Length: 435
Image 1 (cartoon, helix red, strand yellow):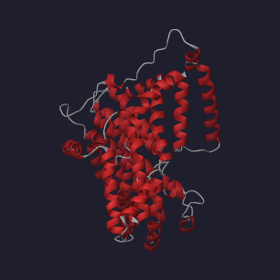
Image 2: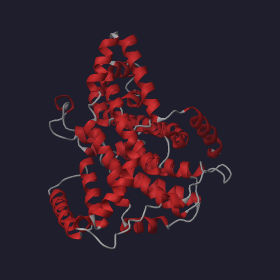
Image 3: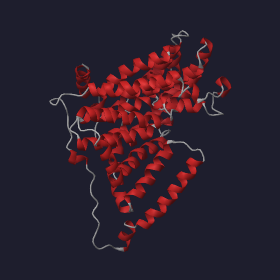
Image 4: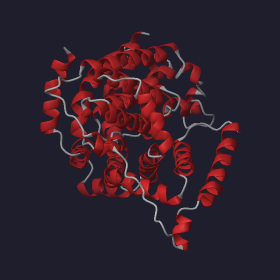
Protein backbone atom coordinates (compact mmCIF):
# COMPACT_ATOMS: atom_id res chain seq x y z
CA UNK A 1 0.00 0.00 0.00
CA UNK A 2 2.69 2.51 1.01
CA UNK A 3 4.81 1.52 -1.96
CA UNK A 4 1.84 2.41 -4.16
CA UNK A 5 1.55 5.81 -2.41
CA UNK A 6 5.29 6.51 -2.43
CA UNK A 7 5.77 5.71 -6.11
CA UNK A 8 4.03 8.84 -7.50
CA UNK A 9 5.75 10.99 -4.84
CA UNK A 10 9.13 9.69 -5.99
CA UNK A 11 8.25 10.40 -9.63
CA UNK A 12 7.00 13.93 -8.91
CA UNK A 13 10.05 14.82 -6.82
CA UNK A 14 12.39 13.30 -9.39
CA UNK A 15 10.79 15.42 -12.11
CA UNK A 16 10.29 18.74 -10.31
CA UNK A 17 12.71 19.02 -7.37
CA UNK A 18 15.71 21.05 -8.58
CA UNK A 19 19.29 20.65 -7.44
CA UNK A 20 19.71 21.89 -3.83
CA UNK A 21 21.66 24.88 -5.13
CA UNK A 22 18.71 25.93 -7.31
CA UNK A 23 16.40 25.26 -4.35
CA UNK A 24 18.33 27.64 -2.10
CA UNK A 25 18.40 30.32 -4.83
CA UNK A 26 14.60 30.07 -5.15
CA UNK A 27 14.24 30.31 -1.36
CA UNK A 28 16.45 33.39 -1.38
CA UNK A 29 14.31 35.13 -3.99
CA UNK A 30 11.08 34.19 -2.18
CA UNK A 31 12.34 35.51 1.17
CA UNK A 32 13.64 38.73 -0.41
CA UNK A 33 10.27 39.34 -2.05
CA UNK A 34 8.35 38.53 1.16
CA UNK A 35 10.51 40.92 3.20
CA UNK A 36 9.68 43.72 0.76
CA UNK A 37 5.98 42.92 0.33
CA UNK A 38 4.97 42.01 3.88
CA UNK A 39 7.52 43.79 6.06
CA UNK A 40 7.84 46.96 3.97
CA UNK A 41 11.61 46.94 3.50
CA UNK A 42 13.24 48.50 0.45
CA UNK A 43 15.13 46.34 -2.07
CA UNK A 44 18.45 47.86 -0.96
CA UNK A 45 17.66 47.24 2.71
CA UNK A 46 16.88 43.58 1.97
CA UNK A 47 20.02 43.20 -0.14
CA UNK A 48 22.04 44.68 2.73
CA UNK A 49 20.55 42.23 5.24
CA UNK A 50 21.36 39.38 2.88
CA UNK A 51 24.92 40.47 2.21
CA UNK A 52 25.69 41.25 5.85
CA UNK A 53 24.54 37.79 6.93
CA UNK A 54 25.98 35.84 4.01
CA UNK A 55 29.06 34.60 5.87
CA UNK A 56 27.46 34.08 9.29
CA UNK A 57 27.55 30.27 8.99
CA UNK A 58 31.21 29.89 8.01
CA UNK A 59 32.15 28.11 11.24
CA UNK A 60 29.12 25.84 11.02
CA UNK A 61 29.76 25.15 7.33
CA UNK A 62 33.31 24.06 8.14
CA UNK A 63 31.99 21.84 10.92
CA UNK A 64 29.61 20.18 8.47
CA UNK A 65 32.37 19.66 5.90
CA UNK A 66 34.41 17.99 8.64
CA UNK A 67 31.43 15.83 9.65
CA UNK A 68 31.43 14.44 6.12
CA UNK A 69 35.20 14.22 5.63
CA UNK A 70 36.25 12.88 9.03
CA UNK A 71 33.36 10.42 9.03
CA UNK A 72 34.42 9.15 5.62
CA UNK A 73 38.06 8.86 6.66
CA UNK A 74 37.11 6.89 9.77
CA UNK A 75 34.78 4.57 7.86
CA UNK A 76 37.41 3.86 5.18
CA UNK A 77 39.85 2.36 7.70
CA UNK A 78 40.20 -1.43 7.44
CA UNK A 79 39.02 -2.07 11.01
CA UNK A 80 35.86 0.06 10.73
CA UNK A 81 35.10 -1.38 7.29
CA UNK A 82 35.26 -4.87 8.75
CA UNK A 83 33.04 -3.86 11.67
CA UNK A 84 30.44 -2.28 9.38
CA UNK A 85 30.60 -5.29 7.08
CA UNK A 86 29.99 -7.64 10.01
CA UNK A 87 27.03 -5.56 11.19
CA UNK A 88 25.69 -5.40 7.64
CA UNK A 89 25.96 -9.18 7.51
CA UNK A 90 23.11 -9.43 10.01
CA UNK A 91 20.71 -9.23 7.07
CA UNK A 92 20.69 -10.71 3.60
CA UNK A 93 17.32 -9.48 2.32
CA UNK A 94 16.32 -6.10 0.89
CA UNK A 95 13.56 -5.64 3.47
CA UNK A 96 15.89 -6.53 6.33
CA UNK A 97 18.49 -4.08 5.02
CA UNK A 98 15.97 -1.23 5.04
CA UNK A 99 14.84 -2.05 8.58
CA UNK A 100 18.40 -2.37 9.90
CA UNK A 101 19.61 0.90 8.39
CA UNK A 102 16.54 2.71 9.71
CA UNK A 103 17.02 1.49 13.28
CA UNK A 104 20.77 2.21 13.32
CA UNK A 105 20.20 5.70 11.93
CA UNK A 106 17.43 6.46 14.44
CA UNK A 107 19.56 5.32 17.37
CA UNK A 108 22.65 7.22 16.22
CA UNK A 109 20.65 10.40 15.54
CA UNK A 110 18.97 10.25 18.96
CA UNK A 111 22.43 10.10 20.55
CA UNK A 112 23.87 12.94 18.48
CA UNK A 113 22.64 14.48 15.22
CA UNK A 114 26.08 14.81 13.60
CA UNK A 115 26.92 11.25 14.57
CA UNK A 116 23.64 10.06 13.10
CA UNK A 117 24.08 11.80 9.77
CA UNK A 118 27.44 10.16 9.15
CA UNK A 119 26.89 6.72 10.68
CA UNK A 120 23.59 6.19 8.89
CA UNK A 121 25.03 7.01 5.47
CA UNK A 122 28.22 4.99 5.94
CA UNK A 123 26.33 1.98 7.20
CA UNK A 124 23.90 2.20 4.30
CA UNK A 125 26.81 2.21 1.84
CA UNK A 126 28.27 -0.86 3.50
CA UNK A 127 24.96 -2.72 3.29
CA UNK A 128 24.66 -1.78 -0.39
CA UNK A 129 27.90 -3.68 -1.01
CA UNK A 130 26.36 -6.89 0.32
CA UNK A 131 22.62 -6.73 -0.32
CA UNK A 132 20.78 -6.06 -3.56
CA UNK A 133 18.38 -3.29 -2.49
CA UNK A 134 17.04 -0.04 -3.92
CA UNK A 135 19.92 2.36 -3.20
CA UNK A 136 17.72 5.47 -3.15
CA UNK A 137 15.42 4.06 -0.46
CA UNK A 138 18.40 2.73 1.49
CA UNK A 139 19.92 6.23 1.73
CA UNK A 140 16.49 7.78 2.36
CA UNK A 141 16.10 5.30 5.25
CA UNK A 142 19.43 6.47 6.65
CA UNK A 143 18.28 10.09 6.44
CA UNK A 144 14.81 9.39 7.84
CA UNK A 145 16.36 8.55 11.22
CA UNK A 146 17.36 12.20 11.51
CA UNK A 147 13.72 13.03 12.37
CA UNK A 148 14.33 12.22 16.07
CA UNK A 149 17.44 14.33 16.66
CA UNK A 150 15.79 17.31 18.35
CA UNK A 151 13.97 15.02 20.77
CA UNK A 152 17.26 13.30 21.62
CA UNK A 153 20.35 13.75 23.77
CA UNK A 154 21.83 16.51 21.58
CA UNK A 155 18.63 18.53 21.02
CA UNK A 156 19.77 22.15 20.95
CA UNK A 157 16.52 23.69 22.30
CA UNK A 158 16.07 21.42 25.37
CA UNK A 159 19.78 21.60 26.17
CA UNK A 160 19.76 25.39 25.82
CA UNK A 161 16.94 25.95 28.30
CA UNK A 162 18.53 23.44 30.70
CA UNK A 163 21.67 25.59 30.88
CA UNK A 164 21.96 28.27 33.55
CA UNK A 165 22.31 31.73 32.07
CA UNK A 166 20.39 31.01 28.85
CA UNK A 167 18.84 34.13 27.24
CA UNK A 168 15.30 33.40 28.48
CA UNK A 169 16.13 32.33 32.04
CA UNK A 170 14.49 35.38 33.59
CA UNK A 171 11.24 34.45 31.87
CA UNK A 172 11.06 30.66 32.23
CA UNK A 173 13.92 29.78 34.55
CA UNK A 174 16.12 26.74 33.96
CA UNK A 175 14.08 23.79 32.68
CA UNK A 176 15.75 20.42 33.23
CA UNK A 177 15.83 17.67 30.63
CA UNK A 178 13.46 15.61 32.81
CA UNK A 179 10.72 17.97 31.61
CA UNK A 180 11.80 17.98 27.95
CA UNK A 181 13.98 15.18 26.55
CA UNK A 182 12.97 12.64 29.21
CA UNK A 183 9.37 13.75 29.63
CA UNK A 184 6.63 11.20 28.99
CA UNK A 185 5.22 12.99 25.94
CA UNK A 186 8.63 13.36 24.30
CA UNK A 187 9.71 9.77 24.93
CA UNK A 188 6.34 8.55 23.64
CA UNK A 189 6.89 10.47 20.39
CA UNK A 190 10.42 9.08 20.06
CA UNK A 191 9.28 5.49 20.69
CA UNK A 192 6.44 5.85 18.18
CA UNK A 193 8.86 7.12 15.54
CA UNK A 194 11.32 4.29 16.29
CA UNK A 195 8.49 1.89 15.45
CA UNK A 196 6.82 3.70 12.55
CA UNK A 197 9.83 5.01 10.59
CA UNK A 198 11.47 1.59 9.95
CA UNK A 199 8.11 -0.01 9.10
CA UNK A 200 7.20 2.79 6.69
CA UNK A 201 10.58 2.52 5.00
CA UNK A 202 10.13 -1.24 4.66
CA UNK A 203 6.64 -0.84 3.18
CA UNK A 204 7.94 1.68 0.62
CA UNK A 205 10.36 -0.88 -0.81
CA UNK A 206 9.88 -0.84 -4.60
CA UNK A 207 9.50 -3.94 -6.68
CA UNK A 208 12.56 -5.36 -8.41
CA UNK A 209 11.49 -3.74 -11.68
CA UNK A 210 11.10 -0.29 -10.10
CA UNK A 211 14.24 -0.43 -7.96
CA UNK A 212 17.46 1.43 -8.66
CA UNK A 213 20.56 -0.54 -7.75
CA UNK A 214 24.18 0.49 -7.41
CA UNK A 215 27.21 -1.48 -8.53
CA UNK A 216 28.95 -2.57 -5.28
CA UNK A 217 32.31 -2.11 -6.99
CA UNK A 218 31.64 1.64 -7.23
CA UNK A 219 31.32 1.84 -3.44
CA UNK A 220 34.70 0.27 -2.69
CA UNK A 221 37.47 2.54 -1.46
CA UNK A 222 40.64 2.78 -3.54
CA UNK A 223 43.58 0.77 -2.27
CA UNK A 224 46.70 2.80 -1.49
CA UNK A 225 49.82 1.25 -3.05
CA UNK A 226 53.08 1.73 -1.19
CA UNK A 227 56.25 2.48 -3.20
CA UNK A 228 58.93 -0.23 -3.08
CA UNK A 229 61.77 2.26 -2.65
CA UNK A 230 60.96 5.35 -0.56
CA UNK A 231 62.60 8.75 -0.41
CA UNK A 232 63.04 10.45 3.02
CA UNK A 233 59.84 12.42 2.38
CA UNK A 234 57.96 9.24 1.50
CA UNK A 235 59.26 7.54 4.66
CA UNK A 236 57.74 10.37 6.68
CA UNK A 237 54.45 9.94 4.82
CA UNK A 238 54.49 6.27 5.78
CA UNK A 239 55.67 6.80 9.35
CA UNK A 240 53.58 5.08 12.01
CA UNK A 241 55.57 6.91 14.69
CA UNK A 242 54.12 10.31 13.70
CA UNK A 243 50.65 8.79 13.61
CA UNK A 244 51.18 7.23 17.03
CA UNK A 245 52.27 10.50 18.64
CA UNK A 246 49.29 12.48 17.32
CA UNK A 247 46.89 9.65 18.06
CA UNK A 248 48.18 9.39 21.64
CA UNK A 249 47.68 13.12 22.19
CA UNK A 250 44.16 12.94 20.79
CA UNK A 251 43.18 9.97 22.94
CA UNK A 252 44.59 11.67 26.04
CA UNK A 253 42.50 14.76 25.36
CA UNK A 254 39.31 12.77 24.77
CA UNK A 255 39.76 10.77 27.99
CA UNK A 256 40.32 13.97 29.96
CA UNK A 257 37.33 15.63 28.26
CA UNK A 258 34.82 12.88 28.96
CA UNK A 259 36.08 12.18 32.49
CA UNK A 260 35.58 15.87 33.15
CA UNK A 261 31.90 15.57 32.26
CA UNK A 262 32.12 16.65 28.62
CA UNK A 263 29.31 15.75 26.21
CA UNK A 264 29.08 14.96 22.50
CA UNK A 265 29.18 18.29 20.71
CA UNK A 266 29.68 18.62 16.98
CA UNK A 267 33.33 19.60 17.49
CA UNK A 268 33.94 16.59 19.74
CA UNK A 269 32.27 14.24 17.24
CA UNK A 270 34.54 15.56 14.50
CA UNK A 271 37.61 15.34 16.74
CA UNK A 272 36.71 11.78 17.71
CA UNK A 273 36.22 10.75 14.07
CA UNK A 274 39.52 12.36 13.07
CA UNK A 275 41.61 10.80 15.86
CA UNK A 276 40.12 7.36 15.22
CA UNK A 277 40.84 7.78 11.49
CA UNK A 278 44.44 8.87 12.17
CA UNK A 279 45.11 5.91 14.43
CA UNK A 280 43.39 3.24 12.36
CA UNK A 281 44.81 4.34 9.00
CA UNK A 282 48.26 3.77 10.47
CA UNK A 283 50.19 6.17 8.24
CA UNK A 284 49.71 9.76 7.05
CA UNK A 285 49.78 8.48 3.45
CA UNK A 286 46.72 6.27 3.99
CA UNK A 287 44.89 9.05 5.83
CA UNK A 288 45.53 11.60 3.08
CA UNK A 289 44.34 9.16 0.41
CA UNK A 290 41.06 8.78 2.33
CA UNK A 291 40.86 12.56 2.75
CA UNK A 292 41.18 13.03 -1.01
CA UNK A 293 38.21 10.77 -1.61
CA UNK A 294 36.10 12.08 1.26
CA UNK A 295 36.34 15.74 0.36
CA UNK A 296 34.79 15.18 -3.08
CA UNK A 297 31.28 15.10 -1.63
CA UNK A 298 31.58 18.39 0.26
CA UNK A 299 31.01 20.80 -2.64
CA UNK A 300 27.30 21.26 -1.92
CA UNK A 301 27.96 22.32 1.66
CA UNK A 302 30.66 24.79 0.64
CA UNK A 303 28.53 26.68 -1.87
CA UNK A 304 25.05 26.45 -0.30
CA UNK A 305 25.51 27.19 3.39
CA UNK A 306 26.41 30.89 2.81
CA UNK A 307 23.11 31.31 0.94
CA UNK A 308 21.21 29.83 3.89
CA UNK A 309 23.05 32.24 6.18
CA UNK A 310 21.82 35.09 3.99
CA UNK A 311 18.25 33.76 4.10
CA UNK A 312 18.42 33.48 7.89
CA UNK A 313 19.63 37.06 8.15
CA UNK A 314 16.69 38.34 6.10
CA UNK A 315 14.18 36.25 8.05
CA UNK A 316 15.47 37.54 11.38
CA UNK A 317 16.33 41.17 10.61
CA UNK A 318 13.27 41.87 8.46
CA UNK A 319 10.88 40.47 11.07
CA UNK A 320 9.51 37.77 8.74
CA UNK A 321 10.25 34.88 11.12
CA UNK A 322 8.55 36.67 14.01
CA UNK A 323 5.57 37.61 11.84
CA UNK A 324 5.00 34.01 10.72
CA UNK A 325 5.22 32.79 14.31
CA UNK A 326 2.95 35.53 15.66
CA UNK A 327 0.29 34.90 13.02
CA UNK A 328 0.10 31.15 13.64
CA UNK A 329 0.27 31.46 17.42
CA UNK A 330 -2.54 34.01 17.34
CA UNK A 331 -4.83 31.26 16.05
CA UNK A 332 -4.14 29.02 19.03
CA UNK A 333 -6.13 28.20 22.14
CA UNK A 334 -4.55 26.67 25.27
CA UNK A 335 -5.27 23.18 23.95
CA UNK A 336 -4.10 23.76 20.39
CA UNK A 337 -1.07 25.94 21.20
CA UNK A 338 1.55 23.13 20.96
CA UNK A 339 0.17 22.19 17.55
CA UNK A 340 0.37 25.72 16.14
CA UNK A 341 3.82 26.27 17.69
CA UNK A 342 4.93 23.03 16.02
CA UNK A 343 3.53 24.07 12.62
CA UNK A 344 5.07 27.54 12.85
CA UNK A 345 8.47 26.03 13.66
CA UNK A 346 8.17 23.65 10.72
CA UNK A 347 7.53 26.56 8.36
CA UNK A 348 10.30 28.74 9.76
CA UNK A 349 12.71 25.78 9.53
CA UNK A 350 12.57 25.95 5.72
CA UNK A 351 14.24 29.35 5.89
CA UNK A 352 16.17 29.14 9.19
CA UNK A 353 17.46 25.54 9.17
CA UNK A 354 19.40 25.81 12.42
CA UNK A 355 17.91 24.60 15.67
CA UNK A 356 19.70 27.09 17.89
CA UNK A 357 19.18 29.97 15.47
CA UNK A 358 15.49 29.15 15.08
CA UNK A 359 14.96 29.07 18.85
CA UNK A 360 16.57 32.50 19.17
CA UNK A 361 14.10 33.82 16.56
CA UNK A 362 10.92 32.11 17.77
CA UNK A 363 11.33 32.01 21.54
CA UNK A 364 10.53 35.73 22.00
CA UNK A 365 7.17 35.04 20.32
CA UNK A 366 6.39 31.52 21.56
CA UNK A 367 7.25 31.90 25.25
CA UNK A 368 5.11 35.00 26.04
CA UNK A 369 2.18 33.49 24.14
CA UNK A 370 2.54 30.21 26.04
CA UNK A 371 2.61 32.09 29.34
CA UNK A 372 -0.48 34.11 28.43
CA UNK A 373 -2.40 30.94 27.53
CA UNK A 374 -1.18 28.99 30.53
CA UNK A 375 0.77 26.47 28.43
CA UNK A 376 3.76 24.71 29.97
CA UNK A 377 6.99 26.35 28.76
CA UNK A 378 8.75 22.98 28.42
CA UNK A 379 6.07 21.66 26.09
CA UNK A 380 6.11 24.91 24.08
CA UNK A 381 9.89 24.65 23.69
CA UNK A 382 9.67 21.02 22.55
CA UNK A 383 6.97 21.97 20.04
CA UNK A 384 9.48 24.33 18.44
CA UNK A 385 12.20 21.67 18.66
CA UNK A 386 10.07 19.04 16.94
CA UNK A 387 8.90 21.51 14.29
CA UNK A 388 12.54 22.23 13.50
CA UNK A 389 13.26 18.50 13.08
CA UNK A 390 10.04 17.70 11.22
CA UNK A 391 10.44 19.62 7.95
CA UNK A 392 14.06 18.52 7.62
CA UNK A 393 12.54 15.54 5.85
CA UNK A 394 11.97 17.70 2.75
CA UNK A 395 14.55 20.44 3.34
CA UNK A 396 17.80 19.51 1.49
CA UNK A 397 20.01 21.54 3.88
CA UNK A 398 20.65 18.71 6.34
CA UNK A 399 20.68 16.00 3.70
CA UNK A 400 23.80 17.41 2.03
CA UNK A 401 26.33 15.44 4.14
CA UNK A 402 24.50 12.16 3.57
CA UNK A 403 24.09 12.87 -0.15
CA UNK A 404 27.80 13.71 -0.38
CA UNK A 405 28.77 10.42 1.24
CA UNK A 406 26.29 8.39 -0.82
CA UNK A 407 26.95 10.12 -4.15
CA UNK A 408 23.24 10.86 -4.74
CA UNK A 409 21.15 13.96 -5.44
CA UNK A 410 18.40 15.36 -3.23
CA UNK A 411 15.68 14.33 -5.66
CA UNK A 412 16.79 10.69 -5.33
CA UNK A 413 15.62 10.47 -1.70
CA UNK A 414 13.14 13.30 -1.08
CA UNK A 415 10.21 11.48 -2.68
CA UNK A 416 10.47 8.77 -0.02
CA UNK A 417 11.04 11.34 2.73
CA UNK A 418 7.87 13.23 1.76
CA UNK A 419 5.77 10.37 3.12
CA UNK A 420 7.73 10.58 6.38
CA UNK A 421 6.91 14.29 6.55
CA UNK A 422 3.19 13.47 6.44
CA UNK A 423 3.17 10.52 8.84
CA UNK A 424 5.71 11.85 11.35
CA UNK A 425 3.92 15.21 11.37
CA UNK A 426 0.73 13.48 12.49
CA UNK A 427 2.52 11.46 15.19
CA UNK A 428 4.41 14.45 16.59
CA UNK A 429 1.37 16.75 16.53
CA UNK A 430 -0.76 14.18 18.36
CA UNK A 431 1.93 13.58 20.95
CA UNK A 432 2.48 17.26 21.64
CA UNK A 433 -1.25 18.01 21.83
CA UNK A 434 -2.76 15.07 23.71
CA UNK A 435 -0.05 13.32 25.78
